[in-house]
Length: 233
Image 1 (cartoon, rainbow, N blue to C red):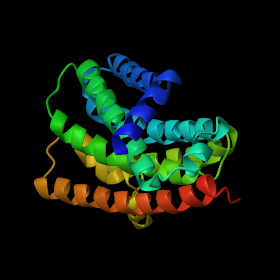
Image 2: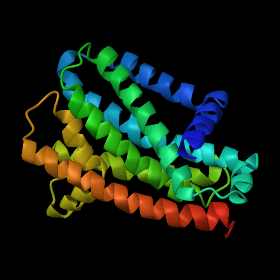
Image 3: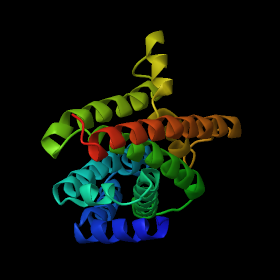
């Protein structure tokens, strides 16, 4: 069942140009980074990496769900013996793989180096899981991108605030609450190729993203079944 779902999602994603566009965005980010002087890369690369696996994935998975609602794919699946967690896992896995491809393009083209790539891959994979699952859970209630625009902007703003805190722009004690935002632990993985980050920090960051993955999966499972499958409003 999982294999069929992966194949179907891949075919639909390619035919709808969602997946090719996702990869092209990673390529575009890499090309954009080439315009920055080398001394700016440790700051700019992590920002582009959080956009690629997180925010772009958050938006694109919502677009996929809207399309599947409109063409009746979700309605058709609702009358099959499918386990909806398999549907969620398949979509999350594919988006995570695409995120890794995008991250490799960003690193290879934007920095002309693959040094520290394992850190980036781990961070991108975990970050993508979190934001894709959140995207599935939140998008399930909406029917088109216009309705989804406000959540996208809210997630964008909140996810970028940790960068401002990390670089010392938000100094008040209250801003320490940003440590719970999933983009914050991901930031340490994205910084690791450029600055020294301790193993303990990376380990704690990985645990934080895994915890966020569990929370996001619970949100996705409950909301997707309630709004997309049962059709409750």
